[in-house]
Every structure is written in structure tokens, then in C-alpha cells.
Length: 362
Image 1 (spheres, rainbow, N blue to C red):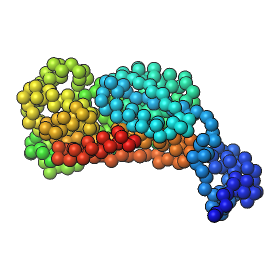
Image 2: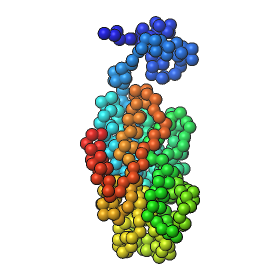
Image 3: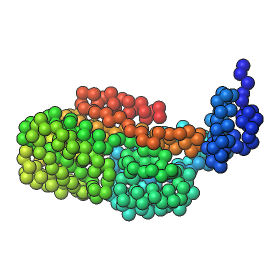
Image 4: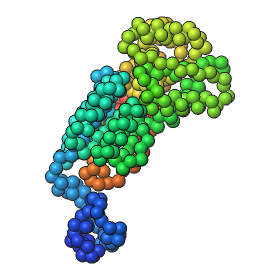
């Protein structure tokens, strides 16, 4: 049986103190390049394998994580990353990991500011954030940098270069827009129009929506085999069903050539309900995410395509990456794009089954 290599053995081999070896193993800094080189050479020569689980338990401390997300009761989409966070917490809580949730209204940047300030006033080791507001999101992440608070972004990627940025986990919003355009174009005829519909407030302060729109527009601009015109519109008060139905009717009356509508969020089901109310269900609809409200209309072909952004995995992997870097001192990949799954009536049951299994396994 191979003898276990101890930190003492590495220190003796490298000609340094045990404290120096410990700092190199746990990436704590305050080690000269020369000493670090000697320690790494000794580790390789002695074939040292650190017991990362025992090492994590040896800290005997609490690791506090804050999760800053839109309110799940206002949008079913946000129930899924919260569920993923909960599943991940079950896997790591025995190592002293705690998670506190902070929520804000999806259309209220001021609530985002208030909740983010509460996190900054607390004593957290890391924060998981969906920075859906570009300006306020950057401001918050700047303050995380000033405080030395590490963070992971999900759903919306705000490019960052600072050392406290752990990683981004989510969709490539630009490519999802390109994919949406290609799918919608398949069922459109020469002379049709494609409508980009944002069902959100403050659209142009939401980077993921801006990038989706850009990708969608670029696809049609770069692929001229069909003459498809494009226009963009938005509606804020989505829960006012009468007002929304009137808006959809007026828009389609002004643009009778519309053959397909791209809903840039998980709220495509609102559009389908309005179209049914108006008796205009012939318009093709494409949206995002496998929430039950959308799946109901996908099954009846009133939604033609859904692009799955894997929100449950976003939440789950965010916590696992924080744990790996913060507790186990592992390096994590900065940008982790999740697959953009194309779901339609013919294959939806497979995805539904997988989602149900994930709810049980993760």
C-alpha cells in the first residue's frame, strides 16, 4: 500500500515551512514565486493527493452565501433556479454552507438596489446574483469588488474583469436570439414580418433582452434568402389581460403581414392567451423555458418552439461552483454557457421527463 504523503513531507522535500505548503495548497497568497515553485515541484514528485473533503471539514466554519433573484411568485421562471439552489444546498450544507435569499420585483430596479445593499451590509462570503438590470447590476458588482465579496452571475451576463468574479452560468443570450430567428424563419413566407416582443419594463436596461434582440436581428440581416421585415415592440403591464389583448390586436391590425412573434422571455403563454381571445391563433409563436404555462400551449401547437435555458441547472451549478472555489479551493471556468435546447411538441415529453428526474435527483 502506498504511504500517505503528509504536508510535513512536502515541506521537507521543498525546504520550506509547513505553513508555506499550507498557503500554497489553499491558495492563500503571501508566498514568493520561488517558494511556490519548490512546493509545486515537491507535490508533483511525491504525487501528493489532497483529501479535499477532509480539508473542507477541517475549516470548521460557516460559509455564508447570499442569493439575489427576482421574486419567484411573480414569474414561474424564477421558481426553477431557486429550486436548483435548494437542491445544491442539500448537497453541500454538511460542509457549513448556508444560503440566504433576497428577492426583488423583476421590473423594479429600486428593489434590486435595496436588496443588494442588505447583502453588502451583511457578512457574506459569496453572492449568487441575476443582474437583470445593467446599470444597477454593474453598480452592485463594483461594490462587491470594493468589499472583496466574490460573486457568480446567472441568467444575465455582465462582462467583468475583476478578481471577485467567479463565473457566469446561463445561456448565451446573443446566440439564443440567433437560434430563435432561424427557427421562426422556417415557417415564414416571403413578405412576412417577424415581431420581437418584449414583455418587460425597462427593456434596454436588461442586457439579456438586448442581446437576444441583437442576435435575432442579425440573423435576418445576414440571411437574405427570404424578404422578412422586422420590428420590435414591448408591453409592460402583462397582468392586465384586457389592456394586453387590446395592444396585441392593435399591433396586428397595423402589421397584418406578421407571420411569427418572438417573445424574448418565458412569458409566451400570455401572448398565446391573447391571440386565442382575439381568434388569431394562426400566428407562429416562439418563446423561452419549460414552465408549465408554456408547456400546456406547446402540447397543443399554439406555441411552436420553446428554447430551454435550463434555469434549474443555472441555480444548481452556481452553488456548486461557489462551493468548489470557495471551500475546496478549486479553479472554476469563468464562462459556463448551458446548452440551448430546442423543444417542440414532438420531443417535449423527453424534456418533461428529464426535468422531473432532475427534481428528484439534484
